[in-house]
Every structure is written in structure tokens, then in C-alpha cells.
Length: 217
Image (cartoon, rainbow, N blue to C red; front, side, top):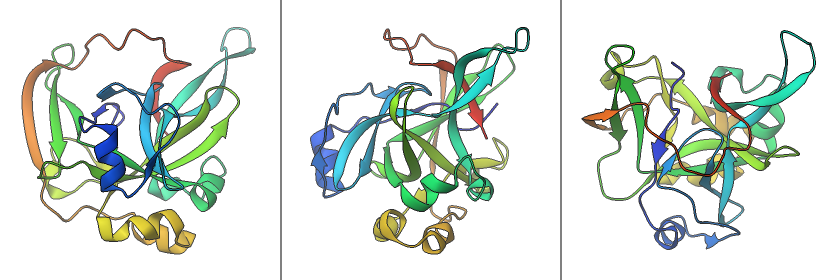
């Protein structure tokens, strides 16, 4: 299962704007639980904005060879950021993704539950993101993934790139080399909350703008 296909943000938008010293941009209201293909909040150009989580990847039908709905590519490996699919966005359009916690599936297939991971404290933390405009869904963003830390060794081999507040400016406005240097394994504390929540739960009623089969590309 590709990593980070669900996260939540429980902090009010106004408080996020204050934490990130940003203004509230267009259409900031989103669900607390964010899934690939649905809107989430990002901080970019001094604004808290709603964008679709996941870049569209063109797909063709295996049966007919004709174009079908694009696939949602919601996670970008740091070792792939120089490839054509990600390069321009990484160089020119980086963003911060406020996150309260992200979920991983644990347990046997068909009986998986949600374990939530978070940086200790009451405030959301920032995950490194990149974004781009799309003709399919408007502006869309993707999370940058790095190798997991030891705390998550038994769960997955990848995790989101967590940024300390002192590094936010460098991620947003530094050179590509400076930003890439921040794509590193998290060495701070993490909290884990192993719940009995079923991994597969009903999603928000609004239809996603594309195929919601999440991808780590």
C-alpha cells in the first residue's frame, strides 16, 4: 500500500493562517480527513489555499487504448524529484502542507485499522509539498516522501517529509539545492495512536474529481 493516502487537519483555518503567518486565500473550507483526489489546505505565496491532493497522471484503457480518467498521484519520492513528472514543480512551485496527523494501515488484509502518526504538540506540523496548475482539477499538490525513521520501521519504508518551522522559508523560497537538502529522515519525536477504526471508511459525499486510486510515483 502506498504511503500516506490519508491525513487529517483539525485546526481551524484562521489558526493555521496565524501559525504560518499567512492570509486565508480562496475556498479554504475542507474536510478534516483528507483523501487523494479531494481538497486539502496548503500554504503558498503567503496564503492558505485549498487545492486538490494529487497530480493527474494520464491513463489509457488497456482494452481500447483510449484515454480514461487520470490517476491521482498524491506522493512524490524525494529521489524522483528530478524526473520530468515532478521536476518543474519542485524547482518552481513548492508549498507547505499543514497536517495534524497522517494514517497508516495496519493489520491483516480485509481487517486493517488506522494508526495515526503525529509530531507531539497541539499545533499542526508542516509537510513538504509541491504543486502545479492542472486542466483537470485546477491547482493540485503532492506530498514529498523520504525514507522512514526508526520509529516507523515496522510500518512502512517511507514517510512524509516533516519540516521544522526554521526550514519553512528555505523550502518555499530557497534554491532547489537548498530545498532538496531538507528532504531528510525525521529525527524528532513522533506520537502513534493505534486505533480500532477500520481503514476503509465512507469518504466525503462530494465525488472526487478523478480516479482516486492513489499512487506513489
